[in-house]
Length: 527
Image 1: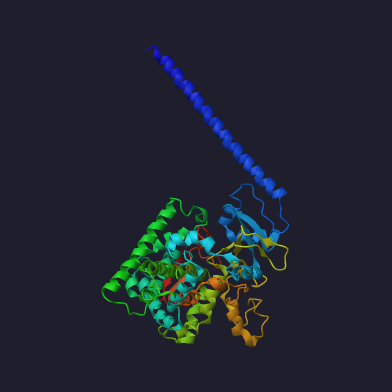
Image 2: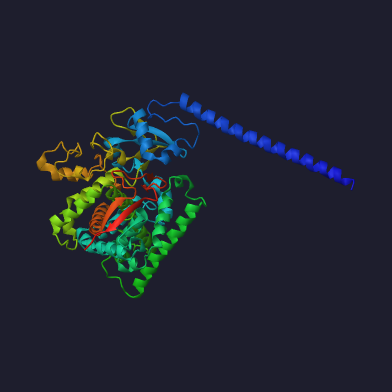
């Protein structure tokens, strides 16, 4: 029993020593943090390069402006444009990122030469875990060019003619079967429904009926999980065992297996002569004579479906929200169909879409206000002089274009915050000002330009240059067909009865979307 006081004393002394060690460690860590912050501040104040764009001041090294940028990228760009002009630099997860806004910036970055700037060095860490190995940015650029040519098989006018009835049937079947749309009216969170519709329509149209048969509502969340692999945090933490990365990997494995199983099924029954994209890819060979391996076919199929999903899911959701906020436009769309296609509303065709200019304008206007990709990045591979300035961008920088900022610039679009589809129609007072420089006789050429055929266009919802999205035409066909069918079936309204306003934007992924829940009120049309 006499040992007990000594034991207590030893434990107490050990406790004090441990507390002292913890205190010293805490003081050391705090000192390191303080010194790091001071060094970071001094570097910004004392070591400014006159040939580099202005650097946004930041307190914390590595973190830099990551948080303020990630919360609302468009606001971040606009606020700093007002302070610094079109060209400025900020620290994003430890890397100096130079933003160049405006049409000149779009052209400088998106039309840059491959030997000078590289998307692969930026995006491979994001795309490879999502799409899979040996495709898109996980392969040499020459191989990527060949893969794009393979995929273009599914993106011809002949293919689009077959897609319109497929998409129409999918949309009509969806609204007939879903419990959320039973009855005469109701309230629904529309983005989740549009995510399902765009997956079902894209999978059936682009990839065939047997692929579509394997899709159900449970696969829509898988694509959301894949999408979250494009979180900005994953530029640095793509390898980390984080919850969204685990979900991403599970989703990628399930989707890859779905496609490889289908490939094996087709080979086993000798079905290798079909005309859909999967069979086409199964028979493709690279220029060196190497057949495209099955795992690459599966990974290209994932990439193709996501290309048909990202923009369309986001854009269709925004369209439905705006139609609910502007019911008169919805009625005008229906009237346009009755006037231009016939009062009995015949089945839609690829050719009939060309006779629905307001439908196309709704898609254009929505993409103008809600670019699905808010930031397009390139790694600088050699010193780049910015024409007309003193700036030289060093090789350790990342270049960032934000075409969506030009799309909401009052210099090009009068009343840019107003959702007005008619600005894209002849004679509109809100027509893009850059287009009005052309003669009225050149309106059609102007309209093509307005859609963004050149990298210097203020309107580039699908990017530009060699890495422009190859699924742009499919997106327009898909979105216009979905809209045309929806307005035949429903009337929409805002839940609270207000008009002319929609909710906020979710920037958790590089692909922005409406904040959920984003509810609308629907009512079935009679007859």
